[in-house]
Amino acid sequence: MSPQEVRDWVRAARRIVLLSGAGMSAESGVPTFRDAQTGLWAKFRPEDLATEDAFRRNPSMVWDWYAMRREALRQVEPNAGHRAVAAFQQRHPGRLAVVTQNVDGLHQRAGSPGVLALHGNLAADRWLDAPRACCDVAVLRTGSPPSCPVCGNLRRPAVVWFGELLPAAELAAAEDAAAACDLMLVVGTSGMVYPAAGLARATPGRVVVLNPHASDLDDAADAVLRGTAAALLPLLLEEQG
Ligand code: OAD
Image (cartoon, rainbow, N blue to C red; front, side):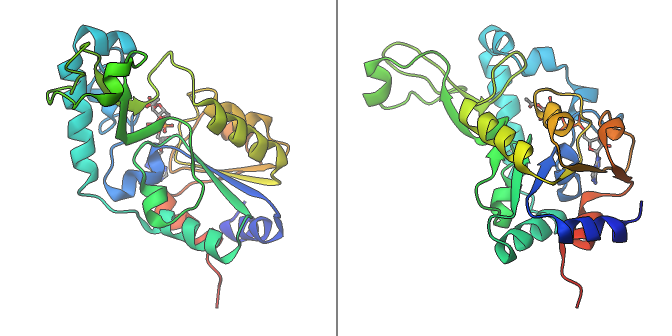
């Protein structure tokens, strides 16, 4: 299948879902998780950094790791892929929904409206334990992590860790969008993490995988385009003059 043929599918599609993973932001300079040399999980163990248990064991180490990633995000910009998606949405309001596993906020910064962020937001934090009245009124005690000076409740990154439920409203909206779409573009994900990957398996729409390497969702695809997000998405989504 050629990008030109997939372009025709895009043109014909009334409702499109773009399901993105870490590869979407790779060309912005954000590391992926599972790429062999450069992925975060090649250097760090998720069970040390991306579970609630890990945070309770060593809150400052986990907080600092997320703070480092947050800081790194300040140095990067949306790439041509993010921009092509946002421009398409602005030209065709309501026709394309972005569902992302990414916590980097780059789709939003590119101008995509209504992004469904299934794994949360790296820039935000929330209480670790259910907040008491003191948490809501007290001035945070600064620290790594910040905490409630009265009860000691800790702030934690507002991302979804392994073993945690996805935000219910986002997941339900993503499932509805997947059920209603006639085309799903699956961009830059290894397709190994559920329930996100399940959206591509459940949709009645055509599925196109955009990825320079093999992924676990290739077998669910009607077409696989081997290329990068920043190269392929402008080709598929931009008007040709
Ligand atoms: P992965 O690191 O598992 O997969 C990244 C995918 O992007 C791989 O299939 C790469 O081949 C592909 N890729 C690399 N460069 C690319 C490029 N320039 N353009 C397009 N694709 C490219 O990342 P995810 O699938 O997003 O979860 O991982 C899923 C979840 O696992 C993440 O959301 C994160 C992680 O643990 C949480 O943080 C909860």
